[in-house]
Amino acid sequence: VNQSSGNVLNDGEFHFYGDYTNEGLFSYTTNSTTGYVIFEGKNKPTQTLAGSSPSFFYDALFNRQANHAFDIKNEIENAGTVNLFNGVLFVDKASNGSFIFLEGAQHMNTSDKSHVDGEVVKLGKEGFKYPIGDSGFYRFASISAPSNKSDEYTGQYFFENSDLLYPHQNRSGVIEKIDDTEYWVVNKKSDTKGSIILTLSWDERTTPEGLINEHPEKLHIVRWDESQKLWINQGGVVDLANKTVSTPI
Image (cartoon, rainbow, N blue to C red; front, side, top):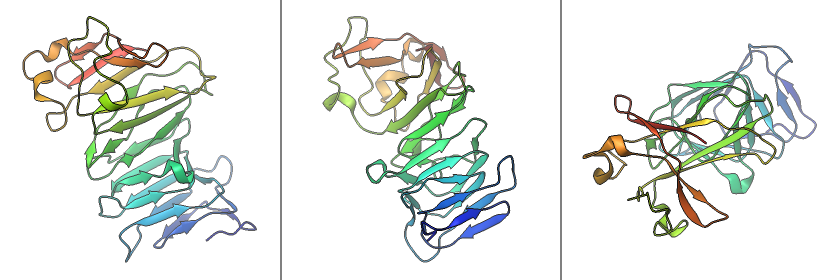
């Protein structure tokens, strides 16, 4: 526990084996790139990162073999490389948890066994591949570089049917069928302007067989329009080799 009077600047290597709570300042020296935090909790099913004050990490390693290895109830801001080596990070947004990649931040070793289950925030004017997934599946979404350094986009993946929230019968005429097993939510902050190219993918383990077996080249990205209460066709360019669909949004 870093109490409210605590003022920690980590420019070295800091290992956390138990739960982590930050009520004060936990950061690194400005312009320093040597700060490294390592979360490898022992003797508990889940390692919890909590606290009312945001934590600023440069490089970070998450390394616990569990499906729900880490419970993120703190605002975590990452500036360097996040090594998702082992264990799924669950972001508890209802408890003020958030996982933020600042401009220049990146992730590595992301996979089915190590990704973020919940919303991921990306700041900055560079392309980004969201390390998101659900129910043990890593199912990324990618965006091209936004226009401004202050631009903010969020991404989250849901391995569930969107029909209950966004009825599939309410769709424009050119849409024949909508994926009924998974969906993504990619949003931009209200003051973020301009557009990006959005890329989604399909996976035989999660995507309905009827969508991808016969004519995958016909796949498009569709978007729920909240004002019209309607699914809108956004078009898409299909990359069969990489199993992706991309379109300007």
